[in-house]
Length: 190
Image (cartoon, rainbow, N blue to C red; front, side, top):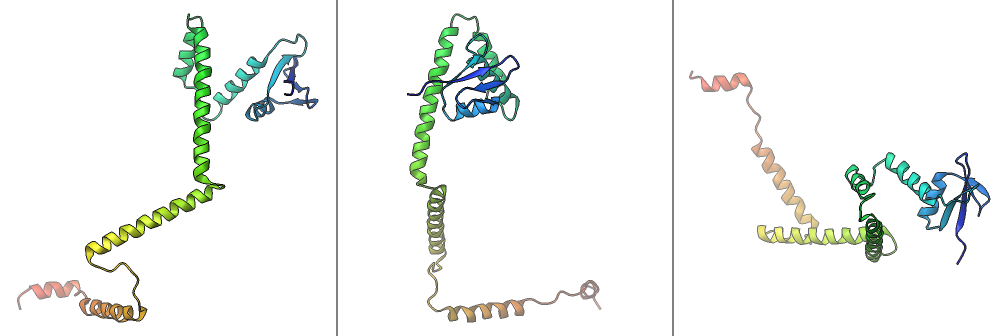
Protein backbone atom coordinates (compact mmCIF):
# COMPACT_ATOMS: atom_id res chain seq x y z
CA UNK A 1 0.00 0.00 0.00
CA UNK A 2 1.38 3.40 -0.97
CA UNK A 3 1.90 6.22 1.48
CA UNK A 4 -0.74 8.91 1.80
CA UNK A 5 -0.20 11.73 -0.64
CA UNK A 6 0.75 14.99 1.10
CA UNK A 7 -0.39 18.37 -0.13
CA UNK A 8 1.14 21.40 1.55
CA UNK A 9 -0.88 24.56 1.97
CA UNK A 10 1.14 27.77 2.09
CA UNK A 11 0.14 31.05 3.77
CA UNK A 12 -0.60 32.55 0.35
CA UNK A 13 -3.28 29.79 0.03
CA UNK A 14 -1.37 27.96 -2.68
CA UNK A 15 -1.42 24.17 -2.62
CA UNK A 16 1.71 22.16 -3.35
CA UNK A 17 1.43 18.47 -4.23
CA UNK A 18 4.59 16.79 -2.93
CA UNK A 19 4.02 13.68 -5.04
CA UNK A 20 4.24 15.48 -8.37
CA UNK A 21 6.35 18.40 -7.07
CA UNK A 22 3.99 20.98 -8.47
CA UNK A 23 1.45 23.56 -7.36
CA UNK A 24 -2.15 22.49 -7.83
CA UNK A 25 -5.55 24.15 -7.63
CA UNK A 26 -8.54 23.37 -5.47
CA UNK A 27 -10.12 21.80 -8.56
CA UNK A 28 -7.13 19.47 -8.80
CA UNK A 29 -7.73 18.45 -5.18
CA UNK A 30 -11.36 17.78 -6.03
CA UNK A 31 -10.23 15.58 -8.91
CA UNK A 32 -8.01 13.62 -6.53
CA UNK A 33 -11.11 12.93 -4.45
CA UNK A 34 -13.13 11.88 -7.49
CA UNK A 35 -10.29 9.58 -8.54
CA UNK A 36 -10.26 7.97 -5.08
CA UNK A 37 -6.75 9.17 -4.18
CA UNK A 38 -5.84 9.14 -0.48
CA UNK A 39 -4.27 12.43 0.58
CA UNK A 40 -3.97 14.88 3.41
CA UNK A 41 -3.47 18.61 3.35
CA UNK A 42 -0.89 19.98 5.79
CA UNK A 43 0.05 23.52 6.72
CA UNK A 44 3.48 24.10 5.18
CA UNK A 45 4.86 25.86 8.30
CA UNK A 46 3.22 24.12 11.25
CA UNK A 47 2.35 20.72 9.78
CA UNK A 48 -1.23 21.09 11.09
CA UNK A 49 -3.76 18.87 9.30
CA UNK A 50 -5.95 21.13 7.11
CA UNK A 51 -7.66 18.35 5.16
CA UNK A 52 -11.14 18.97 6.63
CA UNK A 53 -10.82 22.71 5.98
CA UNK A 54 -9.96 22.11 2.31
CA UNK A 55 -12.74 19.53 1.91
CA UNK A 56 -15.26 21.97 3.40
CA UNK A 57 -13.96 24.64 1.02
CA UNK A 58 -14.57 22.31 -1.94
CA UNK A 59 -18.09 21.54 -0.73
CA UNK A 60 -18.81 25.23 -0.15
CA UNK A 61 -17.63 26.20 -3.62
CA UNK A 62 -19.67 23.48 -5.28
CA UNK A 63 -22.75 24.32 -3.25
CA UNK A 64 -22.52 27.92 -4.46
CA UNK A 65 -22.32 26.96 -8.15
CA UNK A 66 -24.87 25.02 -10.14
CA UNK A 67 -27.42 22.93 -8.31
CA UNK A 68 -26.66 22.47 -4.62
CA UNK A 69 -26.88 19.04 -3.06
CA UNK A 70 -27.47 20.29 0.47
CA UNK A 71 -30.74 22.17 0.98
CA UNK A 72 -31.06 25.08 3.38
CA UNK A 73 -33.24 22.91 5.59
CA UNK A 74 -30.62 20.14 5.73
CA UNK A 75 -27.83 22.60 6.49
CA UNK A 76 -29.94 24.15 9.28
CA UNK A 77 -30.58 20.73 10.78
CA UNK A 78 -26.87 19.89 10.68
CA UNK A 79 -25.99 23.16 12.40
CA UNK A 80 -28.51 22.40 15.16
CA UNK A 81 -26.56 19.24 16.01
CA UNK A 82 -23.40 21.21 16.85
CA UNK A 83 -23.24 21.38 20.64
CA UNK A 84 -26.08 18.87 20.99
CA UNK A 85 -25.52 15.79 23.12
CA UNK A 86 -26.04 13.67 19.99
CA UNK A 87 -23.40 15.50 17.94
CA UNK A 88 -20.95 12.58 18.13
CA UNK A 89 -23.60 10.13 16.99
CA UNK A 90 -24.67 12.30 14.07
CA UNK A 91 -21.25 12.15 12.39
CA UNK A 92 -21.17 8.36 12.66
CA UNK A 93 -24.76 8.12 11.46
CA UNK A 94 -24.04 10.27 8.40
CA UNK A 95 -20.92 8.26 7.58
CA UNK A 96 -22.79 4.96 7.81
CA UNK A 97 -25.72 6.32 5.81
CA UNK A 98 -23.37 7.54 3.10
CA UNK A 99 -21.58 4.18 3.03
CA UNK A 100 -24.90 2.35 2.69
CA UNK A 101 -25.97 4.74 -0.06
CA UNK A 102 -22.70 4.19 -1.95
CA UNK A 103 -23.06 0.41 -1.65
CA UNK A 104 -26.61 0.58 -3.01
CA UNK A 105 -25.46 2.89 -5.79
CA UNK A 106 -22.68 0.46 -6.71
CA UNK A 107 -25.13 -2.45 -6.67
CA UNK A 108 -27.53 -0.50 -8.89
CA UNK A 109 -24.74 0.32 -11.34
CA UNK A 110 -23.71 -3.34 -11.49
CA UNK A 111 -27.30 -4.37 -12.18
CA UNK A 112 -27.61 -1.70 -14.86
CA UNK A 113 -24.27 -2.83 -16.29
CA UNK A 114 -25.69 -6.32 -16.62
CA UNK A 115 -28.64 -4.90 -18.51
CA UNK A 116 -26.50 -2.70 -20.66
CA UNK A 117 -23.99 -5.31 -21.66
CA UNK A 118 -20.91 -3.68 -23.06
CA UNK A 119 -22.54 -0.55 -24.44
CA UNK A 120 -25.62 1.54 -23.73
CA UNK A 121 -26.68 0.88 -27.33
CA UNK A 122 -27.26 -2.80 -26.55
CA UNK A 123 -29.96 -1.85 -24.02
CA UNK A 124 -31.44 0.65 -26.46
CA UNK A 125 -31.56 -2.04 -29.16
CA UNK A 126 -33.25 -4.47 -26.76
CA UNK A 127 -35.81 -1.86 -25.76
CA UNK A 128 -36.47 -1.01 -29.41
CA UNK A 129 -36.95 -4.68 -30.28
CA UNK A 130 -39.34 -5.12 -27.35
CA UNK A 131 -41.28 -2.02 -28.38
CA UNK A 132 -41.51 -3.26 -31.97
CA UNK A 133 -42.73 -6.68 -30.79
CA UNK A 134 -45.36 -5.00 -28.60
CA UNK A 135 -46.38 -2.75 -31.50
CA UNK A 136 -46.76 -5.74 -33.85
CA UNK A 137 -48.77 -7.56 -31.19
CA UNK A 138 -50.97 -4.50 -30.77
CA UNK A 139 -51.50 -4.27 -34.54
CA UNK A 140 -52.36 -7.97 -34.70
CA UNK A 141 -54.85 -7.63 -31.87
CA UNK A 142 -56.38 -4.52 -33.40
CA UNK A 143 -56.48 -6.13 -36.84
CA UNK A 144 -58.13 -9.28 -35.52
CA UNK A 145 -60.77 -7.29 -33.68
CA UNK A 146 -61.56 -5.35 -36.88
CA UNK A 147 -61.51 -8.48 -39.01
CA UNK A 148 -58.66 -7.32 -41.23
CA UNK A 149 -55.64 -9.45 -41.99
CA UNK A 150 -52.42 -8.36 -40.31
CA UNK A 151 -50.03 -10.19 -42.62
CA UNK A 152 -48.74 -8.53 -45.78
CA UNK A 153 -50.57 -9.42 -48.99
CA UNK A 154 -49.09 -12.09 -51.16
CA UNK A 155 -49.44 -10.18 -54.42
CA UNK A 156 -48.90 -6.40 -54.40
CA UNK A 157 -50.67 -6.16 -57.77
CA UNK A 158 -53.97 -6.96 -56.05
CA UNK A 159 -53.65 -3.77 -54.05
CA UNK A 160 -53.44 -1.51 -57.09
CA UNK A 161 -56.99 -2.05 -58.40
CA UNK A 162 -58.49 -1.60 -54.95
CA UNK A 163 -56.63 1.69 -54.55
CA UNK A 164 -57.63 2.77 -58.04
CA UNK A 165 -61.23 1.89 -57.25
CA UNK A 166 -61.03 3.88 -54.04
CA UNK A 167 -59.71 6.90 -55.91
CA UNK A 168 -62.43 6.74 -58.54
CA UNK A 169 -65.09 6.41 -55.83
CA UNK A 170 -63.70 9.48 -54.09
CA UNK A 171 -63.62 11.40 -57.37
CA UNK A 172 -67.28 10.53 -58.06
CA UNK A 173 -68.32 11.56 -54.56
CA UNK A 174 -66.48 14.86 -54.64
CA UNK A 175 -68.72 17.44 -56.29
CA UNK A 176 -67.85 21.10 -56.61
CA UNK A 177 -69.50 23.26 -54.00
CA UNK A 178 -71.90 25.86 -55.42
CA UNK A 179 -70.90 29.49 -55.17
CA UNK A 180 -72.53 31.62 -52.49
CA UNK A 181 -74.84 33.34 -54.97
CA UNK A 182 -76.12 30.05 -56.30
CA UNK A 183 -76.91 28.77 -52.81
CA UNK A 184 -79.24 31.71 -52.15
CA UNK A 185 -80.73 31.37 -55.58
CA UNK A 186 -81.40 27.70 -55.02
CA UNK A 187 -83.23 28.45 -51.76
CA UNK A 188 -85.39 31.22 -53.13
CA UNK A 189 -88.53 30.13 -54.93
CA UNK A 190 -88.73 31.29 -58.57
